[in-house]
Length: 412
Ligand SMILES: [Zn+2]
Image 1 (cartoon, helix red, strand yellow):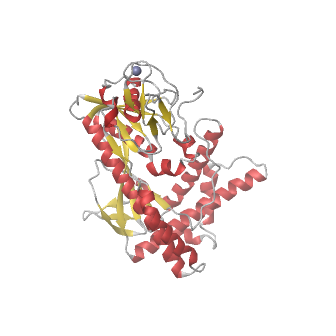
Image 2 (tube, rainbow, N blue to C red; image 1 turned 90 degrees about the vertical axis):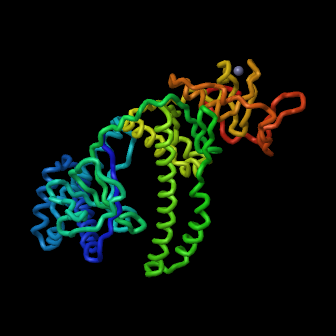
Image 3 (cartoon, rainbow, N blue to C red; image 1 turned 180 degrees about the vertical axis):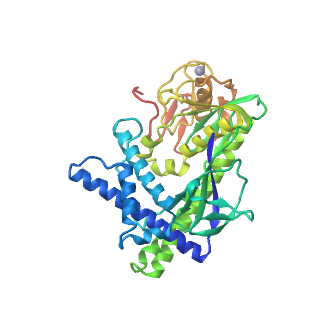
């Protein structure tokens, strides 16, 4: 299986200048090729082939206007053309319904948040005996090897992010590291109240990094907007904003990695719900949804399961996981998000909404999960103001306006 490994790079001054040149040349080649294809389309000429683009690139290098393209590795420029081809392929495949729709390729800008160039084996890049990354026409760049590479990669992508940090990114073949069999299997309910709730009753708090950092971010953004356009101070302020974003992203990734590794190590099988994350992100819950970063987390679970020889299950969204009683299997009405605890009308079990859902997710995937964790004793439930309340006659009522209903196509 192929995994991506990223390492921080620390280029010196001349190397940063050389990389800036490489990013710039790759961008110009990409944009020139895109313009050539767009012009052809506008003139109703046939789609320009990759070979034709490549031939034009070679010719352009001999003109005074584009002679400077010779200052960077030819491989970098060729790879830029490949990127354009990939962007077109994704666009066309999207139109044909073979993959999610994406827009047509767009022109790259010097102001793009992420700059990247790729060196293949043809570029003769290498890792030096002293552990530097040797790149053609750039030099030996210092690398922080935060972990060891499981195999020798053939290609390296050098990235500069919006915060001005440099990374080397390798795709390498890894062998699975099959772990000894675990005895437990677990259903996982990803939610907004808690980041994740497990069918065994464990609740993992949602890390609201963005919210917490938001104050800091707002302050940085205010400072940024006050700066005069095109000034040195404005650029500094922009970098500060980008750095806060980056810190939040790093902290979130770290949390996802730790939790996904733990869940995969401890359980023989995990099951999650196939969330319509994209659809949910369009609702008013958008901020929390993006903040939680479920899809990244789920993909980590998936690849780690494959890596460590565990089972990964994704169940369909149509399963009414929050409405079915995990004790007796009775299907109840839809539950607004405010209802955290409900009582089954058929068997009388008092159920924790999230744990009950996690149990149902595990069951729907055919896992051996126990239902006992989902049951709560009424006296143990903290009564939260404005959430669910119970009348003295025992009938449950919902206080407040439901903001989001789960389940589709059924009436309350
Ligand atoms: Zn029941």
